[in-house]
Amino acid sequence: MSRTLFIIALLALGAAGSWLWARSVAPNWTGPDYGPAFGQHWYDGNAELAGYTLTYPRYGQLRRGTAVAIFVSESQQESTRIKPERPVTDSFGVVKLNLMLDFPTGLYDYHLMTSAFVATQPRHGRPAGAPTKLSFSAQEWCGHAYHQTLFDKDQARYTSHSYFEGEADQDLKLQYPAGGFAEDALLLWARGLAGPRLEAGGSIDVPLLRESAYARLRHVPLAWDAAHLARSKTTETVDVPVGAFVVDVYTATVRSAPTQRTYPVGGRAVPEQTRTWTFYVEAAPPHRVVKWQRSDGIKAELLGAKRLPYWSLNANGREALLKEIGLQPRPARTP
Image (cartoon, rainbow, N blue to C red):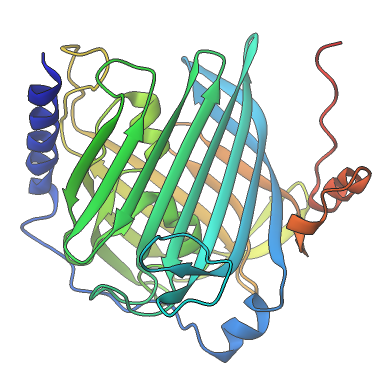
């Protein structure tokens, strides 16, 4: 298949997936309250670092590794969608999640990183708490890949690079449906920092842009899936390595339409699939995610968390601070 025909096929598949939400599109939801209480905590000049144990399925086996989630507020420039280093007139506030997942697969490791940015004020006709930018990268011994999605008023601009035939050097535009949210930002949503605000016992159906890692590792195109987001009516207690927590439980049940794989080109199609995320979120402020899991075997449990200006803690010896988030310095693996 030629590159042109392949891109046309991908666009057609993305449009075909719209049957999941076109008949019942959620209205623009109400986002989080980014008022004084939010600013008092998140504008203190620090970032929240949280370390987790990680279980991640890859190549038909469950892999044990670590996850680090970094939550921080910053500004973003409208014209560039990056953090400005000087005063600009077109900047706006965002909450950013950097999520690093590291796990071994036999001889070699996988390193996955996702960055999700949500606006703290209405942008592009979308409510505060809507995504404005996503980026994702994957590195392992076979090669590396990178995705970026920028959200505009009516569409999302998607760029990706990969070492796989059929996936390399894509530059596409995706429809951005009303009420749309992003699977990559669900950790922000679960702790009340993004997306639809839900009261206890509440739920909402939204179009959800497919998780970057899900699309990349399963070789399926980025597309809009249907999601049912819900919050538990009552709290419960969970035990994780760092201790016991009273939590609210948030779930996201995501349904993907049948689709054609991006690799191998012409390979077997993927049937309709459903996956469910479950997030156990500290009921008391600052509402840390103490555990999350997905129905395919992904699981992470909190080891520790600390607010730190991590970007300035890069001198030799500062690795001792890893114990503050339950981690240890990485041992040498080769001479």
